[in-house]
View 1 (cartoon, rainbow, N blue to C red):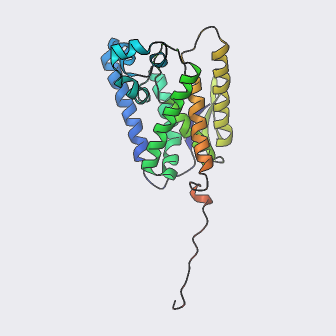
View 2 (view 1 turned 90 degrees about the vertical axis):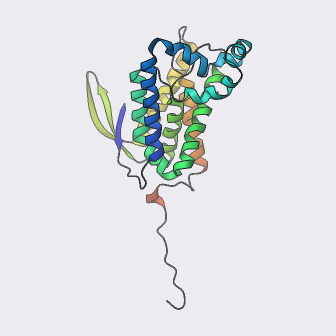
View 3 (view 1 turned 135 degrees about the horizontal axis):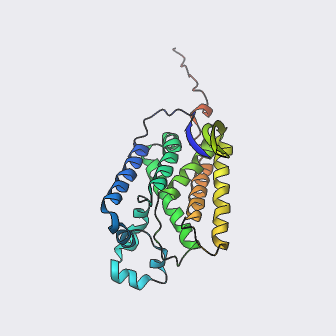
Length: 241
């Protein structure tokens, strides 16, 4: 299922969400420009689980210890293909603006980065010796999806649903679209563990990010309730009014 838009309007302009989309696209254009040098650049800067375990000594000697500090952040802003970044940015565009609206601009930025770091950590726990760099904003965006589900479970999402060889556009509630997405990640993640060959997709990063975003909003749901669920202001009049 491919989400196109929702029916929730935001009260403030999503500066941070638009900036994140713009930065991701700009970095991807840079990736296209450098061409064949991209692979070497990713290994030197992106998060590689093996660098922290079996390849620790080699990584420090070759890239320096600082690389192990900033690489999780770098991985959140690089992508592997046009399809990869297009899908990620579409999800971020559809769901991110309303989450930013409820959390506030600065808190949303920290929330986004935190979910991305948690997603990377979960991927690391599951694949501690993986020699491949992890790339993509999927983990952070999964956190946004988890938050959206808690905040706007009844929102209607215009969704493209594949039917054999055609797509059918239908409005579905968020409590169907987003859990369906999450379940596909769970099944894919389980399959990646049992399969003899890896798909190259960090499924558990998606799972970890989604749970991180959903759990954070669940415990703060009263603080960040959707505007339509907030109580109406009560006018209080003094004795002289």
